[in-house]
Length: 433
Image (tube, rainbow, N blue to C red; front, side):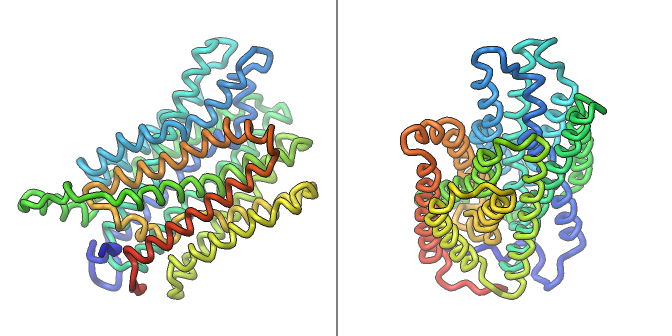
């Protein structure tokens, strides 16, 4: 039986000084990284005016490709950074992903528009989004693996990895706020290309995050596994991967993308077609505040000894019910309050691994863990980016919005089966310690 690591790092009740510093540095870095990543998602309307002229045929395809390329090419990043994480170390991965994000952000800030560079500018912008998507994947999951392998105690691991998700959610909220500011500058004619200033700020923030992580130690469990690799005939690197659990992990990550990005921000945007760009961003800003609050609530529940797997089970069941019930009310949702309520419910109940990330990591062998987690995560997000950019809109022509709710139901059911498999195969009896 595989259970979450509990021997990593100190066995004392209190974190050691270097562990506290590591958690702080990684949390700050994750917040800054996701600020950079999510800027484009919420400021795309302004950027597209510069790089995707509407009067040129076929530009909508390039525009959609640029939007989804952040997630579409993540599997490539998972192969690269997964190999780096399993061979060169966890800290090496999260250090370089921050640098790559900063470079991509700075390039976007200074990149001339279509009027000067033509299609070359469009292709470079898409390339920057690809790099940011690849790097952001290694960032959050790599940081969670690092914390899980550096800190002892399952309960503590769950709380600290959830803190990283809180940082990512907070970074998203700050990105929406920055997008709102750029929209204001553009609308008032103060600075037409105000979005460039925001991306430049993102690049500076990324450099700050890189500096914050420069002196990280290697994770304890990874270092121990490498030592065993050198002295043991039974190499940990030859341990087998549970392929069925990998599939469930992939589906769960697809559900995460559906519940926290596609449905609340992209699909609900269809309900706001009569809104101005500023109104849409304002609506999304209010919704984005829900994410950090939700994570804090999960951390509190774990602190009160509620088992993380139980939280996930209840949440996924409620999301399934939400997807079943929503079609009966969907066509009556018009007011900002009603739209905000739908966004809020989706963000709170969305399928995901928080606050039980260490449980999801444990079944994967230590020296294959980074590759498995990054590949499963990236494939899930890439799959959903293709679905909600191309496949779902095509299906909507035939069966309307029912395809959205049906897809959410399917993801929920498979996730519930996966959670039950995890419970029976790996967590038969697991107390919070």
